[in-house]
Image (cartoon, rainbow, N blue to C red; front, side, top):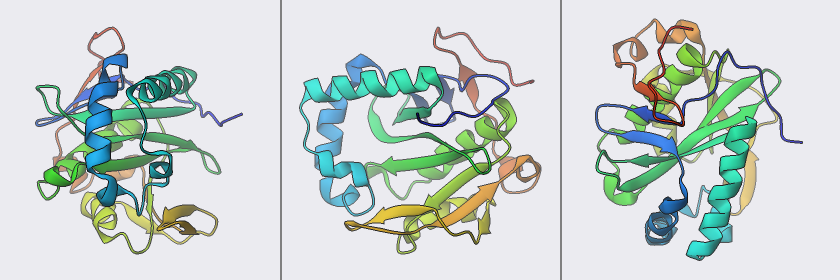
Amino acid sequence: MPPTIALARPVPHRIETERLVIRAYQHADAEQLATVIPRNGSHLRRYMEWMKFEPQTVAQRREWIAGVSDAYADGTSYTMGIFTPDGALIGGTGFHVRTDPERLALGYWIDATHEGHGLVTEACAALTWVALGSVGADVADISHAPSNTRSAAIPARLGYLRKDRIGIECFDDGAKVRAVEWWATRDTLATEPLASFARPALYDGEGTPVPWSL
């Protein structure tokens, strides 16, 4: 069974920042996934292990959305898309549930044409606030391959602390390698730079606003 962790309240289904909508996938997103992922094949293949399952049909993507939706409801994984406010899919993100210690680990990818505008940093800042300041996780975690300098810049930019641990692995060009791991805790939210990021707006699966106070 995939692990679950005790959270103070459910991970919201929709998170809105100044420029982004980060939300759980819906059945209708299959068509956009079928367009965006294939055009990013060379961009994503080195570090995203799931690219070995590409290409997929729209029907297969609908099955995948159903599976990640079940995992979201079960609290075993929280897979989300990154959208513009007008609904265009530009990336993916979410939380992996990890234990020893219990924590929420952020993952992310973005369409190559949207790199270089701070959008992944904005998304990860919002998710860090959600993990530590809304749902009550003790630790937010980002890990990446040592060669992935673009990915490494995100936790460093947000004030995460690098951890020297053995055992976390990630994917790099067809092989599993020891990951570089970064952690943030609630204390991190009170310091720069995360303290300067506005808390995102949160909504549940029915579209009802979720208050920030625990």
